[in-house]
Length: 168
Image (cartoon, rainbow, N blue to C red; front, side):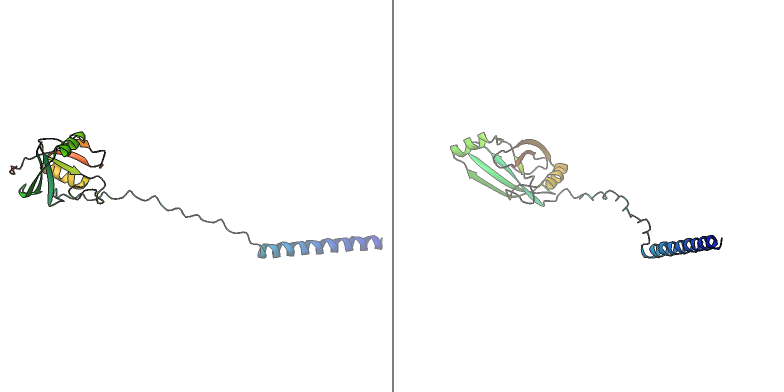
């Protein structure tokens, strides 16, 4: 029986040692390989929509602008002061029959003043063309009506009705 008790005692001791070693091993593993806490993911709150841009209330973004006139014999360019409608400069030049035909093919209005608008501003194709923003300001003061887009240049023609009483 003593053998049996010794065997049982050894077995119990061995089991206790294994449990102790196992517990130490798990403790060591727990210290060395700590589980990372859940990562907190920060999400930026949605950005508010951009504030409405202040629209320039001055209709005369262009202090002066140029309007054009064409008849069968000549073409004219008139520089107009925006706020007063006063003519600052008026130039007239003769036009050949070939130039007149080309203007008719481009559907340039004959016998009416017109304004050139370049939608690509500030990289304007023509220095005498106004930008879209300038057009919006001028439309608050003058009677403008869309005529056409020129396919050759991309410029837009607006018919200009002189309602300020400037001499023609």
